[in-house]
Image (cartoon, rainbow over all chains, first blue to last red; front, side, top):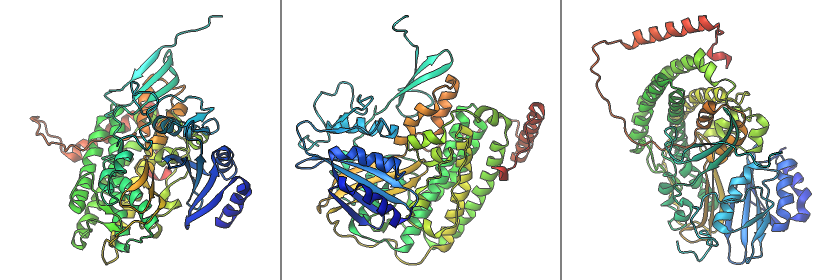
Length: 146
Length: 405
């Protein structure tokens, strides 16, 4: 797919998005609510055939953001799905590991450091925190001393 | 029916002679065959992402170059590209070429390091000593250009810290010629060796489908027929101006990964040579004052695969979020696909084949032997070739040439 075809393809999921931002020639951000992230990620992986790179979790003031970075290697694009989790008390989002084994580690990591509950994750054990780390303390959240 | 049968578990790590870093593999075994693998990491979590959020933008390249002593050019480059994307900065042409040269020299020494370790893991220490000997001059070149053999810290936002001085170019080209010749000899010897064929072929196969599912990158992906390479797909630095090709193999076994790495050394030499000859005149950096609010994704092809950095700025002098992904983070979980069904003895080699990041920054000391029997280089080479020919004849191995791969 060239650039135009990719944009046309991405417009198929327009109804699930809040907005689309293109920051440079080959970087696109797709903004969505947490409920829609699962379907959008599945679409990017299975229909667009993009390659999963990594996910980033950010503690914004009024929500948690999960950024799923995908690479569309044919034309060197980075497509980032930016999902907003509005519930700050019990942050949760559908896991994408069941259809994408590559996401297993990073979802476990985000669960460790930010306390996001990945629903349906097959193996949500600790990845980077030590076994004796206290429960309920999430080091990457705001307010935790640096 | 018995409800629970306790399965034997074999532990590799957290401290194991084959791994200079702490990783813990638990292999569930049925006799000699591995039926499941569980990986535990983070015995030495350094919190680099968190530290990065406390540093200023221009200090971070020196922090991220310490993520890995071997990939210490690619991490800062990916970070710097992400910040340059936010600020809309275009570094001068010469800086892009200098970045390419440093990154390709890094790839040459990293691949030679792996070939040496790979040889060492199968008990073939001749390969280890040769490969590491040929790696030394590359480190010396890097030291001459940047001042450091590892952790070069040569990129900064807007360009490079140190230039490649014009008067050193003939010397570097000359060294590259020598390295190419030696590596060619080593490559022929390794790829032609029947023992290595017997030991590495068909071992630890990662199929193309599994490589896509686990989203692996670098030689691990290219050895399984997935031709991803950020240098070609999303060209950065000066890669778009150079003539080179992406090396792939389809078999997915340890041998295929070795072939990919060995042949990539020649591509890297080719690229470094072209970049040195084309090196444009001019400054190597532009001044960057402030980083505006925004977010950027930078990536670079490290020797082990794609390095990805995401940076978000709120207009202050520090990033509010900095995510770094090293290639081993996606390559290591693929062991679930490549190790199950293997013999225990093959697993350590399969683990080593993705080249999980080692940190080896100590200098080697030269010790004089007291052996009176002196074989010179030519004589040893001759003896070695005779031995290989004899073994090949005995086991009926086919004649192979470098061009066949």
